[in-house]
Length: 124
Image (cartoon, rainbow, N blue to C red; front, side, top):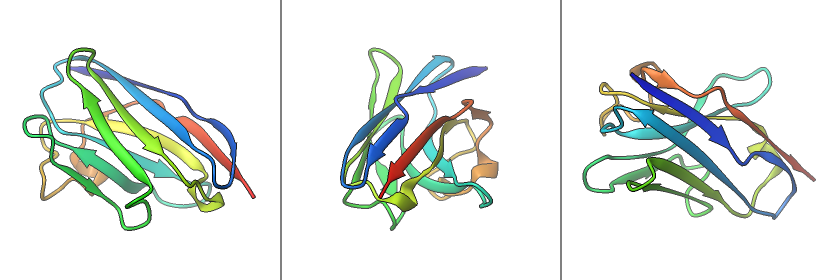
């Protein structure tokens, strides 16, 4: 079992930055990912990172603005979000699980463990 807890959400003006964190406990030797869900929309992939070799992947909408990383010493994954836009407003979730592989990172149904989410609001 894996327990995930996000933190770091909040209200920020467009162009600003936020750093989200996801604390993991339990068996954490899996890829981890960030997803987001805006009001009335489906959950969408944001970024993912592998366990073994620090490979990463980003959605086109956040590439060059967001950076995913993980700290193995503290079992924490982070998402540094820069140049935020109003369309980045959403609840952000971290996720993990053994069925999330590099070819399936973008598919939320491949993740078995989810955090409760943290709200990010970007004002214009």
